[in-house]
Length: 387
Image (tube, rainbow, N blue to C red; front, side, top):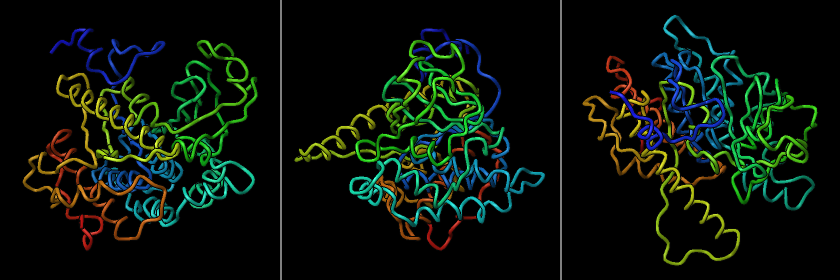
């Protein structure tokens, strides 16, 4: 079916900038987008990766684009990619002990409250404390240069100064208005901290750079100090809460794993500045996420892109697979209500989140991507199921 340009612009969830015109055909390839949502997202996306690994899809991915909690999962996968032992079918038999164990190790530690308290009372910012925790539990001294060449990992943050996306990757980090830095050696923990700097509590993360670090004339209109010397970053979900921007314009097949929640009405919302700001940010996030979700699904239906969307609030029955894993909606929706925090979770809660991400990813992949994919033998943690 031929898609007219006006229809294309109406349905696409991202805006064309510079040479990345949406009127051009996307390149063949598969991108995976991982949304934000704190530890809830981190573990839900771990379930997604677990099932994609079993299906032999991890080596097929050309790009993994992430924001916020999704960037913790993506960053860990990228760091440990070289340790995965893929067989001829593209399945890493050591995924559990390599990737899942590292991510679950972090999920047992509270990062947000501890970082806020130590950032307020001690030296350094809250963002510095989050970065230190990520370094301690997951990333060590690794930098962006420790990521693999393929798939391309893109860790997204939001530039508070330029009001657009700041993307971290191995070949470059850039903001189309400020410019690009080639082959950056920024610590991976800093990139993930910037991507998950949830406002107002964990934000901002500040990058101290030299103007000479930037490729000459690579920025559209803001390539000058202080934009180039002190970059002020906040959560990537502020600009792009599904991690779509750096994937959608590039590849013809896009897989979207969404761990975002839905916020309920409050008859008496908090009025102090911190809790009120938090509530207002959630309202904005909820509306933008809903809009992007509708546009993504419409684009799949119109043939603009191939792929699939699955979310933590999906009803697995809607996929209409007779052999889908048993996930009663009242149980999966209870999992979706896990708080959006970087707060330690007990083992059963971790396992339920992983199982649910695994199950709904499986259903979406077998329903919308490849009908010939085999059904799973069971949950990663069968004793826990989804509750």
